[in-house]
Amino acid sequence: MWTEQLGKQLGNPTRSLGGWLVSKLFKIRNQVLEDNAVQLCGIQPGDTVLELGHGPGLGLQSAAKLLTEPTGHLIGVDYSEYMHQMAKERMKDFIASGKVTFHLCDVAAMPLADDTVDKVFHCNCYYFWPDLNKAATEIHRVMKPGGLMVTTMRLSHVAVLGAKRVMPGENWRPDAYMAALRDSGFTDVKMEDKYHHNIPFQAMFATASK
Ligand SMILES: C[S@@+](CC[C@H](N)C(=O)[O-])C[C@H]1O[C@@H](n2cnc3c(N)ncnc32)[C@H](O)[C@@H]1O
Image: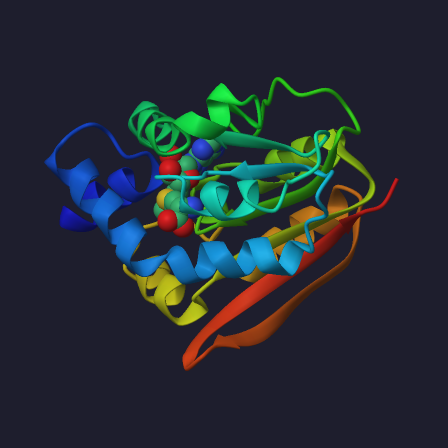
């Protein structure tokens, strides 16, 4: 089924024609979501910031420019080897200066210490996580008390893909993720409708209370 193939490539792009095509799609369609997620995080120059499921690395590029103090650090997590390589190529200067670190791993098992991250952002990502509670608990673990997590999405597009079963199960529904965040210790969990010029999108916010 084409929907299954598309879902596989969106959820874990491989070095293949399909993976290359979806990476082009991410670059054309998702820059707005990535940039707005970075903006809404309120990144401070000395923060430690984590992007989950960074794909080709457009959001990492925006976030890195804001981390101007020596303590400012950026971490990228994605389990697609292809996206990992693509983002590392894009960010090679920041890697050389020690500003960014990459981890090829699952968001549900990150090699990061407890209470170390100020801000987390991700775009178009949680729909593919098989266990939202496990992932949310892991994100909460690595965040500093009071840290902010932001995710952006175009819900109308996501709902179409969800209805066509491109994403497996019902995890694409914002309510499912918001419930998992609350169960994992996040507070002030909310979703807001936003516009970037005339482009509508949604932003979800959650605070890592501890
Ligand atoms: C649809 S793409 C979105 C990429 C980019 N954030 C964007 O909006 O263009 C989803 C990304 O999340 C990654 N991903 C999905 N599930 C993951 C997981 N459990 N752990 C780590 N990365 C994951 C995929 O490899 C892929 O790069």
